[in-house]
Image 1 (tube, rainbow, N blue to C red):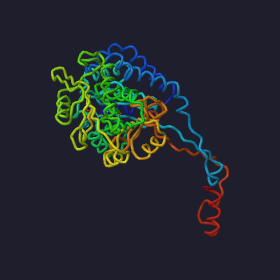
Image 2 (tube, rainbow, N blue to C red):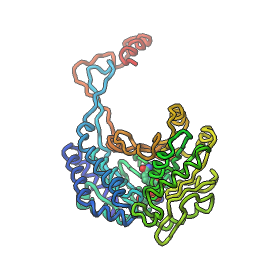
Image 3 (cartoon, rainbow, N blue to C red):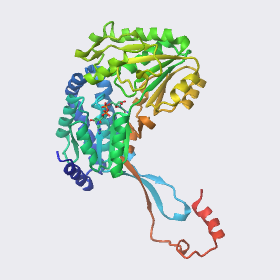
Length: 460
Ligand code: NAD
């Protein structure tokens, strides 16, 4: 595909004004919703083939999630698109002012492989709601899903409006040389830097949804049964290949043994005694990631799991104890079914450990103590957080989802998806009547008098 020509065609379509009316946007959202709903079995099969995701997990975390996001956008779009009245100072009287939502133009969406459908289509829904054209590049490492996305978009939208491009790194790099009006990237922090550098050449605004190591802190007062279930659920869904999965656990030393035992029990309850045969436990995406993950098991003590089979890309849900903060498993985002459990004596130890590390996408705290909750919230920086749960903060449509620092720039979901593809333009309208001479040179009053007048006319 000639990317320059594709972008130019989309820009021409955008400049025709066709994407701006509410009715057009609603119609496209409806088409997207119908296309996804009609292809549910195909989506389930693609996700099963790429990541061995169960139907229940695929529906909850990808298809159902998307349908709900699109329905929400459809219902709220008239309100989101309404201009917002703004007050103006007396100096501009008798003008009126408002903020008006302007679509950016042509958006580029680059997706990762771990939730390959959700993370390509959810940003696209935001781009459509906001009145943009878009090119979507899904990840090459979930090829069945990428192929499905390409066919779904080609059957649903004209290419001059929404198009999919298939390919890997080189394709991405070639796309990034083009001038887009907005770039939405989900993936690693390393590639996020490359995307932002490329966007800088055209001064294109970016949203970067990146990764990191999400810490999970468990205090001695937490009910360990519930905490263990919620941690194991968040960690081992999609075989740990979730950007907001708890990456490692920091538990109060006196609760460590009990927490490890309750997590073992939760793992047996969820995936049985042999998780290899559980239909609910996924696989590692490819051999490269399998070998990277298997390497982490050389250090520390395997308290549970540890079985692996490269031919099936299977690594059992694994709890790793006796880990040092300097071990490789504590340096990089794990992104797989291995959960290191470290202990601490005081919360100050926790803060010291986390202070110099990159800002995570989320952190999780289990404690009933309100004072501890506030102290931890005030002491640890992160994109989002859950108290007494994991992952669930991403479900709130009124909770913008995004990172901070190394874990990303910008946020989306619900209204935030509309806003991240929208430029809110400040517009002032003034009638021709009433044109006081004092605003024009030369000044007609002394500087002290002008200062007094401006305090009154500008306010503040
Ligand atoms: P990745 O950064 O390797 O790839 C993401 C996308 O970028 C792919 O489409 C890929 O083709 C493209 N790409 C790869 N190299 C590139 C380059 N040099 N230049 C331009 N584009 C390039 O990420 P991944 O392995 O697909 O996904 C895993 C990462 O994504 C993890 O770090 C995870 O935490 C993160 N993630 C973040 C979120 C979030 O919402 N914040 C969600 C899912 C995954």
